[in-house]
Image (cartoon, rainbow, N blue to C red; front, side):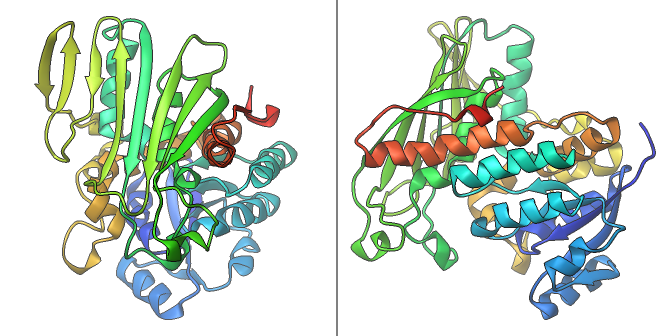
Length: 370
């Protein structure tokens, strides 16, 4: 492995702090700077991890010529603006999901990547989780046979999260279920049709004008006989947290457990078998392998809501960091790159639009398609 070091700055230190020690130990990273508006929190994190370069002003961070790459972990409404600013400042960008909140913002990011020649990667956790890597390995070995159908769901009660989540259309945060159904067959969405179902509390509806408790979307995959289905809920739906996908093949099928922490199931014909999903730390540099099992938010007061509800995102964080950094040092595109991230994100945005229109079929824009 090359010894090139990418100087990384992390923006947003709630969930973002989870990535600091991974970058600190990765052989191709220099954990150079952190940025947080709250100076007290900034210094608390900076002192805890021994990071000298600290910024409360994002614009000042972007003016630092030493920064090679920005990893954005701020609230979703800031993602597009901050990604665009970083790209135009000559920085590579890794951004937590979703890429943006509008189709137009996704288009601008794709264009900015082409104009600047910089790299963009949306840090979608599910497609680097141990469960996904397990199914991907089976598929690439031919064990599943021909893919016949893929289904995914992300059901989560968002009460108690920051206020901007209240009443959010379910499909506006759909990358955790859209990502795996596109990533496994290495496909792109061509068009979508979505229905809304149920109704959330009246006080939640007014913020975004979305009444739906659940949104379910069918996705037609481009240049393929495959379609996929994704389901999303955020409020007023009684369900344990579930971030899942099911894959149906001609030889074997994989179904995610209905109950968190129980074993998943593989079907071979009529015969089901419960399986323990292996870890995939061996795919990583030794220095960061431990982070598939542990991180900043493991216990005590440091627990972040995404870990309490999300089971640590399936050990994906070091895989995400490794993909981003190795793409940079190898001069290749990461997965998902800007165009692929736009395709994944726009599925959710357009799915909600379809639901509002009673299930109308809506095509994905050309800029999201190869």
